[in-house]
Length: 259
Image (cartoon, rainbow, N blue to C red; front, side):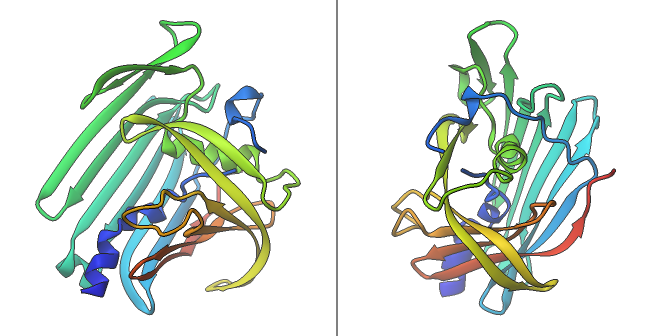
């Protein structure tokens, strides 16, 4: 029962700790570099203790499907978890090559017998001061001009914030459109830490994306992300402190971007 409850706590969170990350100002108020990680692919395994319960991948391909850059995140249950609670999540995004902002994003979720699909289009050309977001499920919404989805938000953070000299406790706010609503993604820097990985000991930068207290989390600091403190800045671990135990995802394979 404990394993079932933990698996239900959305294994897909692993990929999007990806979710993305963190001064006390909106990331949209400055000029930034456009992420370019063409050919990069990251593979993760999700565990509860020593038990494998899921796996996930994140891939970045430039000029794929004629959409600028094509980014895909996928997570699904594996092993005993497929019997207890089968899940399969796919997040895809077409990123504008000149701005790093999304043109289109899709979300496909399967949980046991429940399936849902949604496509969101971002129109930044019709209006000069804002973005028109059109969701298949909820319809049209007008948002701020430079709004990210959760996938492009991750790469924006990684490209433009991790090389800064951050102070412990410092936060970055990334404005995103996620789950059919505007969402302030806040991630707090907590310091440097050396951790053991399957690749050996690695020096990392540690972050706490601020979590919503409620169904899954008891505090705002129940999610932690470790990113390598080197030129590659690779997310190597994510951990969720849930009421029923800890869910942890670790990088098991990495394919570097093309030079």
